[in-house]
Length: 382
Image 1 (cartoon, rainbow, N blue to C red):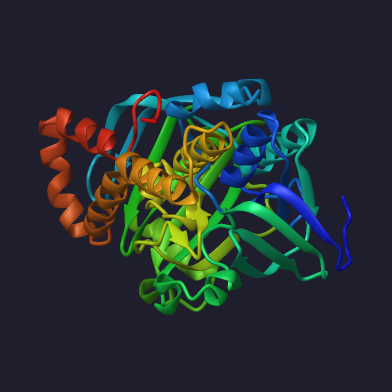
Image 2 (cartoon, helix red, strand yellow):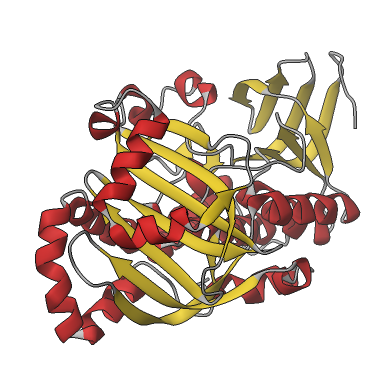
C-alpha cells in the first residue's frame, strides 16, 4: 500500500512498528473486522538482534492467529544449560519449555498473515502523533496523514519517536550492547544455553534450518576495554570454556554479527499521550530470562483484547480501555521484569554467580522457581 499525499486516511487502529507485537496485534484486530494500518520503516524478511527462544505460553495465541511455529521449522526446546567460568555447567529441565525460531522467519510469516487478514502495511516512518478531539492524527516521513481511533506503539526498544514523545527512559543513557549471529554447528537440539562471563552473558539455541543462534549482551563499560568486536569475543571465549567449546566447533554463517546499543531495561510508561505502548516499547525483559519474544506476543494479545472490548461495547470509554490495559499488562508482566532485573544484577558479576551455582546444583527446585518467575503459564490472564 503506497500513500504519499496530504489526504487524511482513516483506520480504526493505527500500529507503529511491525515486530512481533505490532504484527500480532494487526492480525488479531483485523481478524475481528476492524480496519488496521501498520507502519513499519524496514522491509521483510530481515534478521534482528534477538535471542530467538520463545516460551510455549505463546502457542495458544499464535494458533488463534493462524500461525504454527513448527510448520515454519521451529525447534522444540525443553532443557537449560547454565554455565559460569570455572564451574561445571548446571543442566535443568525447563518448567514450561519453548521453541527456537528466527525473527527472519517468524516476523515474515506474521507479516504475510497480517496482509491476508486485511491489514494495510506501509513501509514508512512515523514522525509526529497528535491527539485531539478524541482521535489521533499521525504524520509520516513520506508526508502521509492518518487519522485513527487508537494508536498502538510497538516500534521496539528505542526510537527517535521516544524523544519526540519525551519519554522518561530515553533521557538516560543505557550501558548495554547486544550482538547476535547465526552459526552452523553441532549443539543439542532441545537445549538452550546461558553462558556467563565478565559483564554479561550469552544465549545459545537452535533455530530452523539447522542454524544456531548466538546472542550475547554485555555492559558497555566492559565492552569498550577492547579495541574491536573480535577482540572482545576472543576474551569472552577465553573466560568461559563451555561457550568456547560451542563456538570453536561452529562456523558463523553471517558475514558479520549484528549489533545494537543503548538498550534500556528501565521502567517505561505504558501510556504516552493516549498511545498504548506494546512489546519492547512498553517494557523490555533481560534476555537472560529467555522471554522477550513471548512477552511481545503476549502483550499484543492484551492490547488487542482491550481495543476489541471497546468496539464491541464491553468497555465504554477511552479511559476504561487505558485503565484495563495498564491493569492487565502489570498483572501479567510487572513481576517478570522485576525478577529479570534481579537476575541480571547477579549475572553482571560472574564471581557472585560462581558462588551461587553450587547452591543451585544442590537445590534444583530453586532454579526452576527462578525460571518460572520470569515466565507465564500456558495462557495470559485476561
